[in-house]
View 1 (cartoon, rainbow, N blue to C red):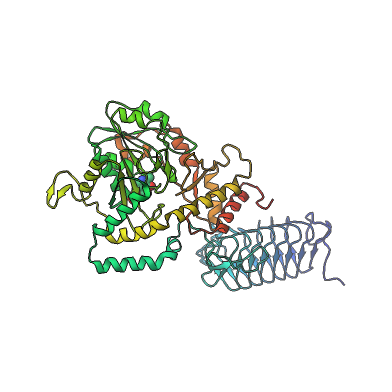
View 2: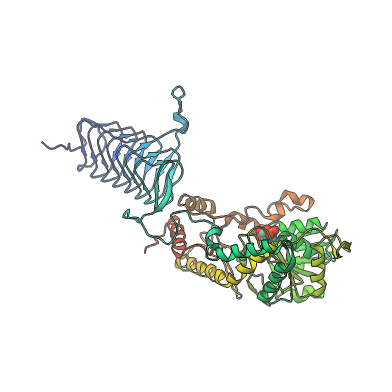
Length: 563
Ligand SMILES: Cc1ncc(COP(=O)(O)O)c(C=O)c1O
């Protein structure tokens, strides 16, 4: 006699609409109603609870429990002695090895009914869980991931990751067939927004030697190392003067001070940026005047700047956001005629080109940041002010040293805004590599464009970053979508980090006090804050990582990356 019982609609065990090709062993119990697709096999002593749904061609080994409302996709295989409690979802093609344990509450107590606290667990398409593994409730196991036998999974597993141990850790990657991959990336499936250790690994020895030299030189603040960096930066940026300072934020404070911004003056700037420029304006007692951005570039709308000028306007701070220069050609001469100084916030744009050549000489002064995530990222904080004007340069040199024209002779209100020698020595080494690092950023951006730009997108579905006539350095690769938060969550679950620059525009920040504007007053900046998403683009990423990010974005939007 066949071991299989063919289940038909008159099966005495249950009366759901089973397909004629399903087989249920006589010892199995199927509560009513449950839904089975075609071709399922349910072996000895299984128990399928009310409301469970099994897709076609599923196989449940002996003694498998399927809780109330549990959903299994098509072709799922569950080996002997597994309990799939309520809240567990297995997508198509998932394989669950023998005696795998799914927990259903985080903090079980025998004497408290916690059925209301069941945390959902999702095992995505094609994933495999080895024998005797334990899956804590509330996690998501990404597509085609591989959980080794006996692993204890306590957090989300990225797609295609191989995880082992207790607690389970990513140790490698597998392909869709489950074979381990020899990838150029280290055994870590997370794609990070920043990986500085990896970025700097090729020059690690040079960097260590430079630190040694500074230590033995005994000169730790300003001095020859800082002077050397200033000369190298001035040459790279093709600008007469470069002054090394403590941070990009302090650079802005000093540059605005150098052009004479003071109490009651108005300074025009962008509401869609990092706070540092506005902080500097407020610190000097001046008033920030915000002009809304262009939705294409996220840059301040330069055409609208002139209409915002008043008799009190002293300066304009354009922000070369995300590594692309603001095109200032339409306003530069007019502002000059009006006696309004341009102080460029170039914190994110070291190495970018503008309408007058390299960013750094398109206004009265330009301010750069060496914060580690920037194009020329240091090993701590640092900044730079550049200018073509010797008087501005002299003022900034004084301001960074307590406003001193010589030692202990203080002619203006400055502060301690000096750059350390060790930082300068390290940055000088990194500067030599900058063209190569920027080329990698550009090629990553180009790869994103070819993967994502090959598809047609609705206006608010997906917007790729605009690239103007002077190019882009892609300090950030920022896309925009009306489904931003859902996309971000999808990518997070696949082990892909992203970031939002910036979740709230500046004109509504509480620190502005009476200068804050009402919500709705600068609609493009407010919309951008809800839609933008920065993708990983740093130079330590491999081309396969960029491909993986792009494919996940396509999958999220229902496009087939492999078409
Ligand atoms: C646009 C912009 N301006 C200014 C700064 C300030 O630079 P720092 O962090 O070196 O003070 C940053 C840094 O994030 C920035 O992104």
